[in-house]
Image 1 (cartoon, rainbow, N blue to C red):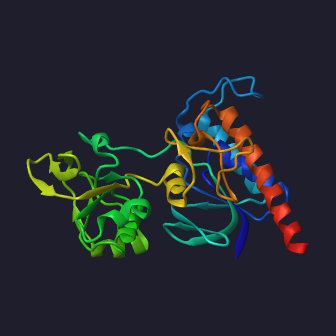
Image 2: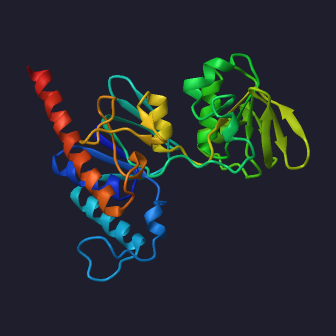
Image 3: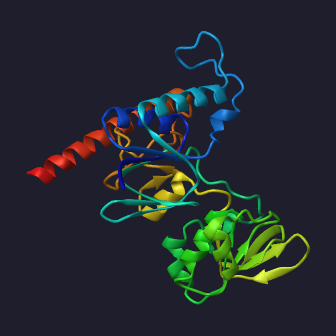
Length: 297
């Protein structure tokens, strides 16, 4: 099955976009987990249409009921990777989905663990994109910092270049699931809390809080879950200041890929996310309509 629109993120931007795609008779899939930052907002008083404050969690729940009523299909899952060929292939922890268009709407960019010197070695041994930078570590000793399925996925990507791969969980218990749990046995797993990384001009060693250390040539950050910015980097999409670059119609530089909400930077408000989502949904429908017209001519 090929979806017309796959929307990644169950926040206000993603759900707003799905309203416009499904009403344009597009087969729409919404993928995400119920962990939007909006759910933590106890009182929202600056969103149009409510005479009294409303909880963020309530607003999200009502939005989900609305999109389900209109026919949007929702999958509660975590997206691990997106690949682009003739269409988009979206891989989650539990399955794979194919779509003609994709909207990135997963909110803020990646979470960085608090590790001494990490930022100092970004681009000098510390990377956030295995498919972008893995080539530079051919047959070298590399690590992946993370404890969820996304970390295993990045380690699997690195197998193309080296078999010397360790997953560092930074003191966290691994939360690998399904196939990723099985495939994680192919790698060394180090669960020690990390204190710092260090080296001369480039990364050379990783230090742990128990006083031990290991030599390392490269460290790939895949902490927690993949963000919209992570997906953008892997797809060659333009980013700036850790945000995805879009035009006034929420389109990225990759044909068929759109982005909306906090991942695009700017004014981080519910109203902004809803507006950007609406524009993205409308333009996704327009993009597909134009594509069909070209195919007929």
